[in-house]
Length: 606
Image 1: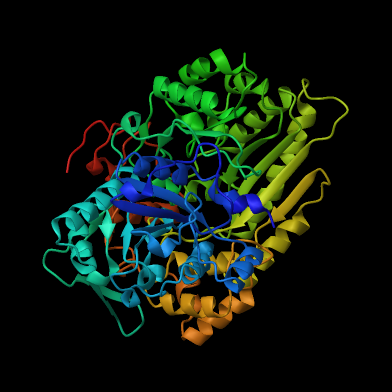
Image 2: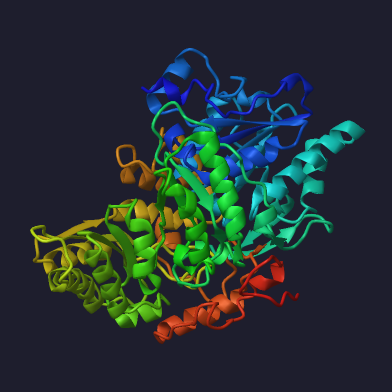
């Protein structure tokens, strides 16, 4: 046990007089303190809500099993770190849903807080339970447990929600039902209880129908339109213990120009909106002075696509080099990696580099719209080797739609040619062997992607492919690792599920499941038992191709990117035809309807 997870009192935490607050918000991260404290979204929203003078936002994390056992034995309810007050005494319990395998932790936190699990069983005396994060783009498997979901970016939306609550309380017009009804009128809020869901005889969704005329038939996501004006913390809460990311994380832009057909983030975070180099530099310098961190990580989905990257790195290196502050640029793409870029970071970052070809052959890379060639990957690796690096990691996805065995062989081939590239480089480190790591995830069909209709390979087929690739690798300088296909199957079912999966979640909770994203706690057999007890067929959600004209559980949301665009991309994938990135040509995805300051979508129109 690490007491630092549970004691609070860190430097940088927000202290307010709770007796003068009109609303209190418990921001809950359903995973360990070390993971939650590394999450930039939590830092942003903690800061944004606490900017409201009459609102107090506090942090809550899932206690690990050893601590939870002690809390239950000693009658200690789930509490917030700033005041140690029980979560059930707050006005709001905000829970971020970052990944599907944290869902059982959500139910455990509700129970440990002393709250009924089902929203319909929670009366006026309990907090409003609001969900946010990327998984809320299909929240249906958790719909029965939440009062409302915040769809999209929350910095402004959550503050509007709390202000509505305060105004209704002040006017004496507040009831939970009336509040939720009014909240549904604000863009970006989805109240599941205000919609009737009907199913067809084959188990697919027939329709989503609002129960009242004033409730919107479709919920549009919220975005921050101007990133330079978005709230950003001038200091971080400084943990007493080591966390996953002990560094300054600075968001450079949101969205992605690439449009990879398997990638949910590339769609749900559109349109692309950049911060100016001056704003990024100002925020990084402020955080450095207030935290003392000696590493800065520039956060985005593809940092080398930032239009003013050279200007930004010059501004940062003007003072970070002198102060020995390390500058790291994750999310590098092989086709935009350059010697200039490597030179800018090589003096402070001596580890290996990571690239993501995703697929082993040009045909499959075109099918998934990766738009990167083997030549570009080898050129990037050669630059890295010439700069003194010996380790390269290559990420792939196994089980992609249209994948054949020759695509699997292509992964092993790419590992071999990268090793050969090392020895062909005259500027390589002499006397050291290269280490090329091939890391393979399992394909998971996600909502709001061109592959949302595709099925996941069966466990047997994924296992066959994983072992086949293993047999194709003959070089000891190539390291191969792959993800647990069983965990990926559960994730696929939860990602594409409807409200019938709420019953599965209840069964999973009853059987004591939690921390499913952790290998030591995950139990595939227990998950399958939960599906069977609930009478739900997991293959219906994970291993079934959805009909192209089928009503999808997430069709109720408008994310900007249209279903018509995703259908076009789906059909092009079957022909292995790629789509230009947004910088080269607009493909009319629809995201520009949402507005925003963006270099790629200058014409904003409904």
